[in-house]
Length: 315
Image (cartoon, rainbow, N blue to C red; front, side, top):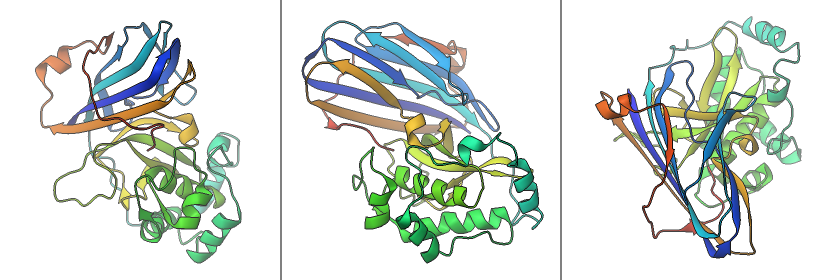
């Protein structure tokens, strides 16, 4: 299945600022069943954009706007091709626990097993683990299915109930949150069982007739856990799904702190408003012009939008 993605971000400032320095993580990854066929990033005001790969293989675009400006618009457009992932069995052999422990005996997966900025153990997490009876079950896959479903059933999906920088304790206390919170909580529970687990940012196509809880016009977040013989396997606790061909992967990290869609600084004492709009459209065949477009372009977008929302953005 081919997907066309348009991700628009507009920062609006209450007065002129003198400089913006920005990192953007919006380019879909190419690996496994997903291929990124085309990507274009445009910015207003005009600027030169450079890109690099971070330590986890995510593409990061970086730019600096030195002149005075009162708004900054970033438009990311992508075309991806996603094939269905390898089918998982109903369960793994109990021996998979020994295989997993062998894989994690070295420090290769250390980053995805230890606490990180948003994923830290605490008494509230320990109490949740007791309430949900989180433990190593018959095999790792069965265990992960159980945790994925337990989080979906225990927490309510409530937009704007937490902030982009909220610790997991806020969602644990209120039993409400958004996909970012659910991903962090699942990562924390899974790592406590010594299963490597990482955060994934991206997009979810909302198919008609499928009642996903996550917002349709926003970015999405889920987790990937390491399974012997299958590698990194995606779980979506917000929607109680195993990741398949509706999830479009952009970046992976220890938690959200590693993969925000935009991250930057500016010079000026102002109030900032943020508008974010996301559209994911499926197509059976890629548009001919999109396939022939060079892999990456940078230019200028002159579109305007009058629908700001509160800064900062959250997944």
